Image (cartoon, rainbow, N blue to C red):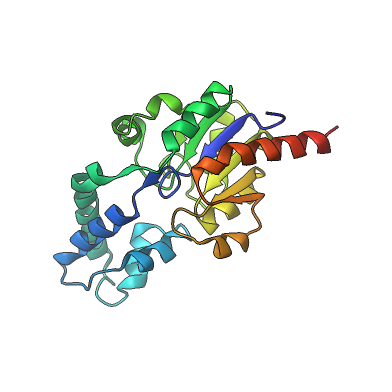
Length: 231
């Protein structure tokens, strides 16, 4: 596999299909405040830039949720709703196979997510989806500054005992590619989540794929190109 020794993934929209459930949870969370429902497309456009939930609420409802205490109550309701709905979240097609193949190839695998869960809590969904044994390290927004800040990716590479240049970051948003570039890792954008190929290409990732099935061949290509460059 040449110089690439680790693959780090974004979680939502990249490995798991959670946008529909996120939208349902948000709409259930704001329902008690008599706020208009948010469309999946509207939410995706904000998640594409890694906007935190509190800021999402501020942007969508600047007048109705101008009071911070009210926003925090809304966040609690949204999180409760997601916890009840998370059984509906499934893996993206091919995710388990790709993760298993990467491990068989001897690569280290990490996840960097903007979720703010910590400790054992952050592994629960991975266990439910039966991919926890295929992940070496997971870094959340509770462990390091959230994307698009590069600290989470840098911390993940360190905990994988790799340098940034040993790693490639796979994500579905423009914020993911910006994060990867800031951290000094190679980047692969995948158009299965919150951003389409045209938007992702604006950030000039090292590669763009339309599905996880294409990922292994692209990683091989990038490894070969990098290996040739360093000869």
